[in-house]
Length: 290
Image 1: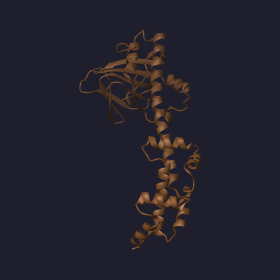
Image 2: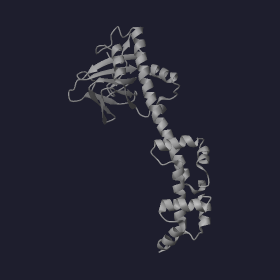
Image 3: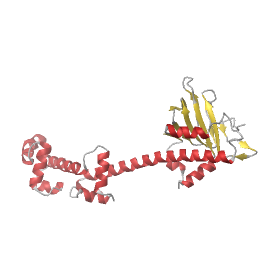
């Protein structure tokens, strides 16, 4: 029988003569879910093979559907319940802390809490992956002698390792997006900063240890204008504001916004604002000062 404590409903992995297996597998349906709030002393991979269920974690509910996979940390207080008496098949992999730590070592993870953002983490499997798991895990609603064999423990370890790697892939994608967002944010800030108006896009990118080509691809991926276009627009907006707020000559404006020639500045400014810099200054400076 499982061990539970009265106060916290903390579940422990089933033991056999004092020996705890690396992985236990339970197969649940809509009538056999453990619906009481509880924690446990192991990690848990929940694979929804068929149907859907409601997961309540720290008071918040989430619906998990077919092919969803949930990774729960031991400290996650949770309960599961069926949805509208819909037929459900749930494969529940209980993973010992020691085996989970060995998985982390295998993937060179020093701290699981730094890699996985929450006590509960979600991903999805392909239908073909689920079918592969069910071929191995066609077991009744309890641990059997067959499962306790070395062969079946090895099979279960393969499944859990695959599930673990799927979560890592999701995390790596998330971290990659965060890194890309950070690069874009940093470059955008520099493009807006008048101190960098005199630098080329290549020089700005190199200051951040990235190539111009890489940064340009990231901007395009984020549906932004090119760094060159944004840089020029920022310079022109700065120049326009300068002409409205200070009594400066056009040649002085060029020096402050990092544009080298009057002809290029005039052409770019007229394209952006519809009038030449001198006409813009004459037309709007008086309005601004009123």
